[in-house]
Image 1 (cartoon, rainbow, N blue to C red):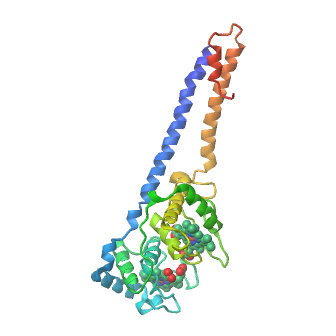
Image 2 (cartoon, rainbow, N blue to C red):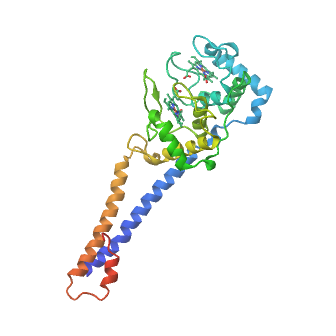
Image 3 (cartoon, helix red, strand yellow):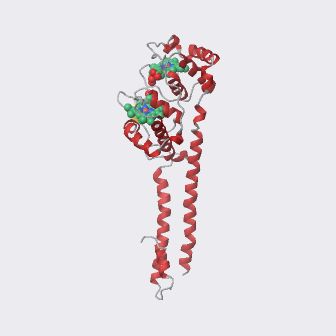
Amino acid sequence: MGSRARHLRLVPVVAAASVALAALLGARAGAVEEEHDPLGYVVDRAALDDPATVAEGAELFRIGCVSCHGPGGVGSPRGPAITDAGAASAHFYLTSGRMPHAGAPDEQARRKPPAYTHEEIEDLVAYVASLGEGPEIPDVHLEEGDLQEGGDLFRGNCAACHSATGAGGALSYGQHAPSLDVATPVQIYEAMIIGPGQMPVFSPEAFSEEELNSIVRYVETLQGLGDPGGFSLGRIGPIPEGFVALVIGTGGMMLTVFLIGRRRHGEAEPPSEPVRPADASTGAGR
Ligand code: HEC
Ligand code: HEC
């Protein structure tokens, strides 16, 4: 009887530990969402049409971009014409630090910390947008996305290059599809409508706005999940998913062992207690 009481005392301890762990992981997932605040990367759309903003951008462009993209963005041997790149492309390439390009013209542009402040990015985006006709910075509405649909579309259209977990992968000619774990919702949407580098364009004809929102929403959940292929769980650090599974699994196993032990105990005692049916019904493993 004494040992049975001890088992019962341990049950809440195990349960509390599991709940605490789950709460910790949940809190970290929340923190990750804040880091990905899409507003942190959205420019003031109204300012993009302001001639003063465009003029500031022209000046920055002359200093940092003309050497490769040519005057007025007409292109040069060192960089493509960007007259019809649009605000979306300029915003994607500048906020993901891909521009200014650091490598040889045929080398893949890498994601880096942005080289410009938010205001400067706004100026440059306004200037590039003023050069011609190109896609605008999209309005992302995660709440309009459907997770199930997003998952299906991601597996069918993105996973071949970025892997099912979004961890990325190698492509031909030394190019690679990057991991999707740091892109903001706006950048994910932009990537689909501009098709950077080797990535195809997923035009509005291919996907409706609602479907694009669904995919963005799905990629956002992948970012919060973590997987054995590379993401860290909720950014706690490089804790392998298996370790957490082990902790939670062990907790559950211990609980089961306690409950089974408790029931066996009841059965072994010859003058069986009148409460036995109820006792047995609480047992796990049935
Ligand atoms: C050292 C040369 C170099 C410099 C400097 C440079 N770029 Fe680029 N840029 C490139 C190359 C090469 C590409 C094509 C690579 C790619 O698409 O991955 C490119 C691509 C782009 C694109 C995408 C084009 C498209 O078709 O959508 C944009 C937009 C862009 N650059 C804007 C800028 C801006 C704005 C600056 C200045 C802040 C800048 N670049 C500075 C070389 C350069
Ligand atoms: C053919 C392979 C391919 C397919 C299919 C593909 N991508 Fe990409 N994706 C790439 C490559 C390559 C890049 C890097 C582009 C560059 O060089 O700048 C990229 C870049 C991205 C980025 C930017 C990541 C960052 O952090 O800067 C996002 C977001 C993205 N892709 C999302 C998607 C989504 C969502 C889909 C499906 C709708 C998709 N991709 C389909 C190859 C692919």
